[in-house]
Image 1 (cartoon, rainbow, N blue to C red):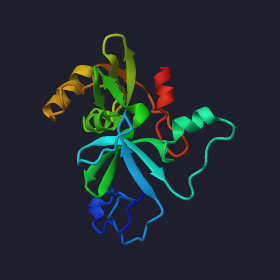
Image 2 (cartoon, helix red, strand yellow):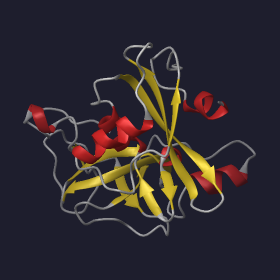
Image 3 (cartoon, helix red, strand yellow):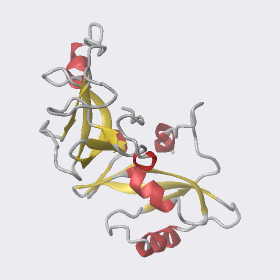
Length: 205
């Protein structure tokens, strides 16, 4: 999904207010009519209220019909009415606009609470001792998962402690169930050629 000046004239809104294409009654200046988008919760019910979060699913003439000779993967990737499950969680900003929230597989589900890794990462990144950060879920027998934060310190001789990070997050008003419960100090963040963090590599640690 993209937000261009025709559909979202305000530059400051364009980064996190993406047009909700394909909704009944919507007419966009860009003329986009061939793409339909739905936000679905875990029960495949549509999320429509502002503030709601669900998986972004879309359908368009260019969408592939399925995986070759893999009906099992195809059934998991597509809804019954032919919408592709992207694996991206989006939040409903306004009745006609949505925004990226997190990758579905990167969410931390702690004791029934869904915790956005992106939200925690952005909060931790504001701590002066942190140069780079990534959040991954750590399996836990009691809570299901815990929040593990991987940090590249700004000064390797003075790395942040978990207590310092959580004290900072408390000052910033982060909800009490979101701060990390484990800290891993690393020298460098693993990234691919387009600088995307390789969380699979972090999980191996």
